[in-house]
Structure formats: C-alpha cells, structure tokens
Amino acid sequence: MRRSSAQGVLYGQTVANVAGIANSDLECMDILYLEGRVTAGRLAEVTGLTTGAITGVVDRLEKAGLVRRERDEKDRRKVFIAVVPEAAMKIGQFYVPMQQAMEKVLGGYSDEELRLLLRFANEGYKGVLAATEALKGLLDTPPEKRPALKLKTRPRQP
Figure 1 (cartoon, rainbow, N blue to C red):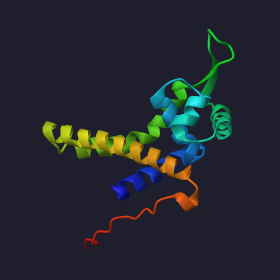
Figure 2: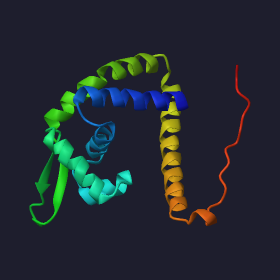
Figure 3: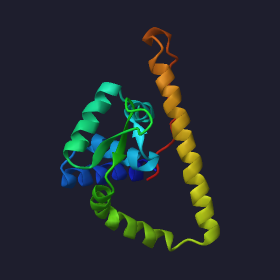
Figure 4: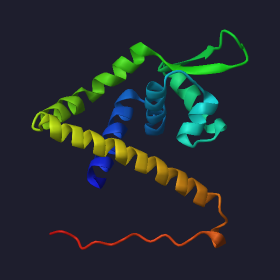
C-alpha cells in the first residue's frame, strides 16, 4: 500500500510537471474536480491549507487556465472556484496510461473480488480521513502535552 501510494504521488508529480504546475496545485485542482464548484474557504477546509495559501493556489491555477472564479448569482460577494472542463480534459489525458493499466489489473478480478476491493478502498479512505483529523487535533496540542506516538513494528519480509 505504501509503495502504491508513493507511486501515485510520483505519478501525480509527473503529470503536474507535464502540465507546468506544482503538484500541490494539481492536487487542489483534483479536489475541486471531485468537490465541484466550491468557495476558497471550503477548499481551504478540505485541504487543510490556509485561505491565504489557497488564494495563491487559485491564482496560479487561474493563470494557467485550469480554474475560474465565478461570482454567486444571488450573493455577488461570494466567489466560487470552478474547474474549466476543457482544461480538466486536457489534464485527464495524462491519466490515460494509469487508467489503462488499472483496467488491465481489475480485469483479472471477479465481481465479488471487485466489491471487496471497493469496500477496502472506501473503508481505507475513511480511515485516512479519521487519522488526518486526529493528527490535526494533535498539532493543536502544545508539544509538551502531546501523547507519544509509536508505530507498531513488524518483521520485514524477505
């Protein structure tokens, strides 16, 4: 899992390099794509970045033509950030090799096995969300009051 996660990060870095943007900006764009049109405040909340950092991210993504700012029709003070669909498709093309590789892998599993893998992925995602919230809470605790965190060690497999 760690190797796969690390390789996914490296793949995303390669996509970002080809697209000419920073990897963290690409990740924010992906979150925007998944979340839909959101405010900068919501994007900050989801990513854990400050609103100031998000402003920089959105400025860079907007300059690259990947997102746009849209004023709310009802409340002109509210601004949403939206992915430019054509730009998302352009970035998406860089994921075709990954999609093809994964389709090949998934083709070797039965429907029952795929349901199990989907369950595992969804539960794993929930676990990562919970761990992220726990870590954020820990960071809000003064260092001298933080509990000691220790990894469980397992013998290495040859």
